[in-house]
Image 1 (cartoon, rainbow, N blue to C red):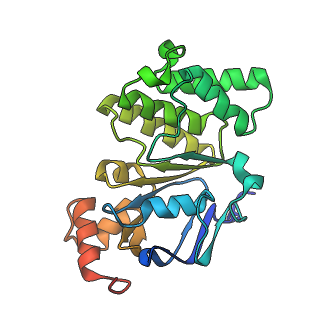
Image 2: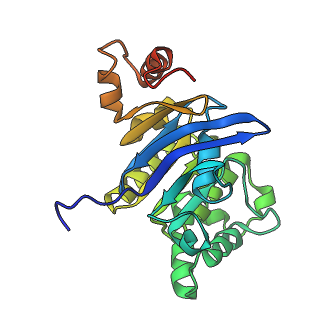
Length: 251
């Protein structure tokens, strides 16, 4: 109800995860409020993709816990979660519309008419409706990126995880996507966006700066720039400021 604080859409508590002894995440804790676009920003190797894989249930924390919509990631809440991985998970031998329809079915859209409508909507959104009968194998890299996004959106998830979603997109489509992302958050949907692009960061409601698997700083873009004491004219400058200062300790 109005005035009541909603529980966080995502909760990460003291999470550590390592690959062959190399820490990708190091005692990381953060919360993502419901109904916002939340950017995970940092250089390659900062732990962004690992965190998203933990949140969608592809990996298990070696220490700590993660909650999505109040539950540990599992098939039970999979229908409420959308995931666009950094590397394409599309079926190249299927057509564009067959891929979108397949991901809709496995995400819980059992009613054929509703699924048909949703498939058309998302393919129109990513400007692939005219290519709906093309084999995915024959699409360019940018088109496959757009189809991956459509497949993540097709079941209208409550929480959407996007790992480098705008890579390979032209500027016009990038603006179109962010306009749609904004409309999703206005409807109460939550977006977690992993990126190293400060252009993506500027569109997010809140940001977490990650470095070497740890949280360097978090807040709105305006708050993060202001917290540097006017030493940052851009988000990139703000990230460098916090990384050097090590507000939460050296990593």
